[in-house]
Length: 223
Ligand SMILES: C[S@@+](CC[C@H](N)C(=O)[O-])C[C@H]1O[C@@H](n2cnc3c(N)ncnc32)[C@H](O)[C@@H]1O
Image 1 (cartoon, rainbow, N blue to C red):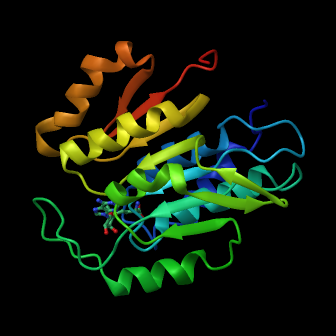
Image 2 (cartoon, rainbow, N blue to C red):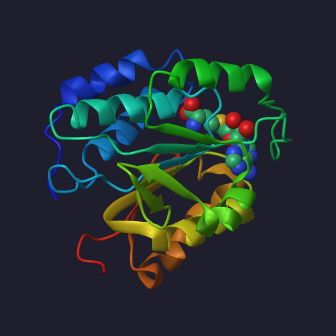
């Protein structure tokens, strides 16, 4: 596996083009872009396990991921799939008055339509994670189970129990050297953040915080 040579300047350019679609601040989008660019890559010609985003809204952060990946893989081989999961449908948003509905769904479809490696799952993370073992994708004439992810970005429900379920279900599926970014871990008095700090060693991962984001890295020498 190799690490991308996409420059900081190009990453800044990708982020600069995205804020119109995402209200996530530049500093956090930069962290996401950098983590996507530095994610492990398969040997030339191979297809990396998918990137996954839970919570998509108008597609801003997913668009950033897709643009950075298309840059990273431009002369390398096929870019990995980016899977997004969001139920829309004005699902009540815990403790906040935000409404995510058809307007956001349409905007997401418009923004991400050019990318054949984008797949949207119109469901909440509870259903997605329950059915994960039954899903597969066709790529290069073969089926690929969704049993491994290169990078996971959690920005859906912020309910601490739901987020924790997402973390513990997806961590074992993260490849060695892969990262899981959790947004808004300062919500609910930092419940998820405190739980992460308390259990990181037992989970065999490294955790650091960048403002409201928590970044979990699975060491490269993990089986
Ligand atoms: C903060 S927005 C995501 C913003 C997006 N990542 C960006 O930066 O452009 C949260 C999204 O999570 C979705 N959501 C809420 N609960 C969810 C759940 N249980 N599973 C998946 N998505 C959920 C909402 O519909 C909303 O679109």
